[in-house]
Image 1: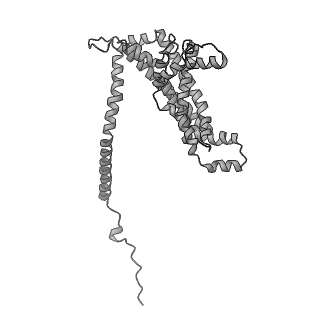
Image 2 (image 1 turned 90 degrees about the horizontal axis):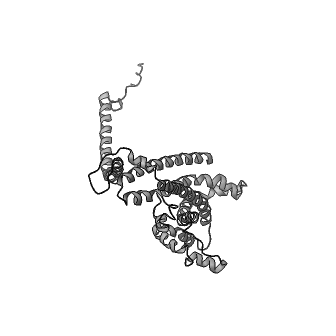
Image 3 (image 1 turned 135 degrees about the vertical axis):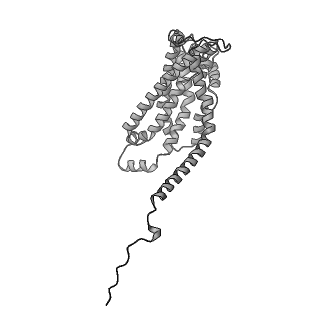
Length: 325
């Protein structure tokens, strides 16, 4: 009786691992494919990068260059004066007034719009008759130019007796004409109120978009667990809205620092310099008077300050998001 030999355990030729040269060829092939894909992606992004350099990077570098000169915007016969423009920035009282009102405007509009937009978004998220029309009414002030609203509200808040608001107050309550735009405090309050009125609806729609992305199952489960409406808002709605708060406040802060059209058309920076802004100082006080070098220095300082504030605001917003989660 002959014993059968055990079956061979050798792998067929096709199952033998490829030699090192095969791995090298595979790696080089993957590298070639990656290089081709990266090259194609770079070609697609070239127009965007070109626009970025042309419209953002180049003007920033040019402003930085002019800030060290006495360039007047017309003649190319200019001199390098070092840090003299930067020293003059901190010696002008009008710029200090502009900085004070710009900070006041930014903080006030950010806090008030956030405090009003979130409750408004909660109301607009409910089902009621005419909901879509109501949403459009609140969103409408964000559509036209804010400069146009400044002109319209200039007639409404006219400090004379012929002003629309003063006429209504006199007819209903017998109150004499109030100096809405001629008193420093009332002028600042008026500018902030108009800004809140024009921006509240837009930010409410932003919060509404985030509210509609929250599954209703969460609220049903919370209700079954006995959570009240306030508890649902604190522990469910508010954490879900934290990213929206970050986006909204970032837009409000950057927009507040860049405010220009509304104070210019509503009060022209007055009375005096009560509603004077940094951007108005750059455009009218620097460029408008042929002091490009000083305007460029103020722009550089302003850009660095805004970048610092925005980074701080993002850091604090992220911490708040983690605490609410």
